[in-house]
Image (tube, rainbow, N blue to C red; front, side, top):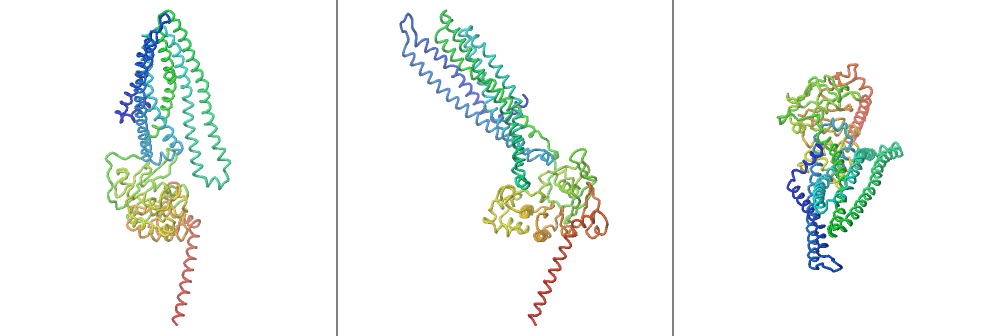
Length: 607
């Protein structure tokens, strides 16, 4: 019940329409109940026979017919108002819930998204929200309608003939209890179905996202089998729920027919004894027919409530999720930072038993470039993820210009960072909109300037529609190097004070990397820059190199001094960087020979 009541809070902001909807429900209920009474009046007063003589009145029948027509019109108007208002309120509530979910997901930290499954989240934002919408639209208002009709009709039946009322109602508890039992049995199955729909969505989403990997490894058959297993389990549970409903629906209909037969038989005897009129028996039968759906819908309403409860629990798992990174009350706005960054004995762990960083201390002054090197899993990416508080440190602190970053608002902190991540993500949009994603008010000239700096402008202009060219999902229509240069342009357009390049030139060729480094050389002036680099040119340009191993800084210094030590950096250089240096040396020799040849030719011409 607490979950169901909490869900109603999304309808509360629209309470005026909710009240109007209840008025419409009440009005429709009144005219539904009134119609059998008009029919009773028409039969008892307009169609009467005594001693074989017709004593009815055509005028009475005409009045009754007009009353029935008026009641039908009034009921229709109230029903229209009920349907319209209920749908408006429920759709608005669903709109608010989806926005609340989306907004919450935007504000949760990396730690939440590391564990969350995309398919499950999508299922909660679609299937579960729809269940809540139906609960608000049909469940709550329908319950009010059922209560009004059942109470009013029961009173009218008792007033008319209490014996016949007891006979008519004798079967109703059986029908109601059977309906409730059926829906109670269906609740765990529906909960399982909702979970399976999320799992199926996860499998489908992963398959579509990794389609190229699937085809590259010829795993189509395996993926089809995996999807088939999930789909079969979903089918099994859906079939089980259908089987329960297929057995109980005709059973409930049969029980109701028995109640009508019993009511007709007892009613005929009451008429014979003079205790009941033809019109009263007719109204009884109409009421029984009318009550069939409200009584049987008790079970259906229980289904709506049960599904809404389970869906509400899944929705509130997101809405109530606490972010591991929280903005401190009274946090300060970071103004124009200088970019002086310090790590003071920083330690970090994703969980209690898996430390990633241990006692890391470093200092980066404005205008300096810090290169991070180390084997896979040494903690390089974690270092740069801690800077904008994607995660919070476990121990120690990080400061910018001497202020702990936990004292700053998240928005102002992250505005001072320009980040190009290793896994570049582009939106399904135009090239222009992807570059201007972080600076939506940027002019075309500013966008082009950033693109030139990232050495991607010429390529963009070669596209059919230039900057208005659409890139595919996740930028699939661009190469890895092109995507990274667009991402670099997007970052540079923000004009940040601290630059973070997470292996951002690893997917570009040597020539492109050289051009990017030329541009970045000017842009890094006056900016603190952190680079996770695997290119020798980047390492040599760094003001300080930090070599990490097992979450600790084991070496620090410039290239020349580190190369003289027989440490981890020297081993990394021998294994990964020496070949690059030899290649660059060959290129330089080739350039020198070409320059000498050109000079000789020039001298010959002059002679």
